[in-house]
Image 1 (tube, rainbow over the protein chains, first blue to last red):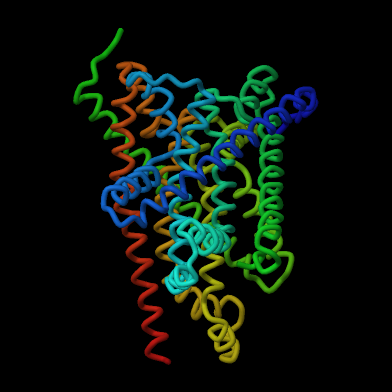
Image 2: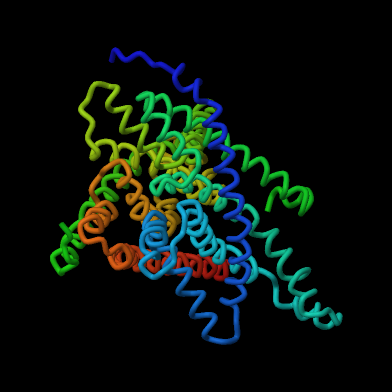
Length: 224
Length: 224
């Protein structure tokens, strides 16, 4: 092997890569917030007394969890225009990430809600709490505490998975890496640096989620 | 020239399923071998081995599969070997799955009750023998449901290999779409094919998990 590594070409464009890091953070954070909202609705629908919301939520979760993210992305970006809905690459990427995360997080949140003992909800009713108070203090927050670690790792998986949206040239780190390597032909070096940036990103997200967990749920939250 | 979407095109897509499956099997095979070593190192008594295995898992779980595939693709090229997307896809996905399987199986090895480790030690079984005769057979049973679940993830992940030019189901879909320009129907067919592959496996994984859970509860119940 007589290859000379040249990272100089990569450092020259490093500020662009950093901008890509920011775009990835922005894209995945937005997907997290909206995806989580969908998950809460989805988990409620799965626990519904009526069969229709249950069936819809069940189908949504199973279809999304058993097809690849990339195919979902193509279906939204390339397929939807023929039904009259044209999205820009960035919008399509965000939509695909939200739909994908929403399904996985629905399952996670549902598991958390199921873990809340029935007796506590009945105790809440006996104390005369309103339904939304029961939902918020007795079901949602304890459920979140239980599933927080699972949710955080799902978020990180979605953040890493977002690299795939470069396939429709939505703006994020991998797409910028693709542009840079097509200009300087230092493909291996560029992707090595990009791998390091993603690793730093996932470690940073991990640390941030750990801090949020401690902040929200106190010291015991660390373990659960 | 525009082609119509006929049964020929659908047949072409269905034939591409074998490349998706073959790649998934290859990556699973390679990932199992490396992953088992990683899992065993991860529970080794020597600190440095544990650290090496933990770092390996962190790196490959903390970077996107797409970037790993690019690094495999361009890295094989640097070594002076002819780049072909087969080698790169198989190598990249092997590394990816070895980290996930290593982490999953570590959990399964550690789920074997401590008394079993101590019992084996009391029988004067040393390191390798203890693992081979006492721990791994029991861990194997615990590992089946999550491993089936991971295989579903792997089948879906092979779609990312289409971005580095490996012709599997998703790439075949892009080719058919480029020729027929019927994106919605093409990607819907492909999503259905993935669903048909993945859904039964997902169900199997869930069923096994429930059955093993029940068995475990039963054993505890009979002991108590």
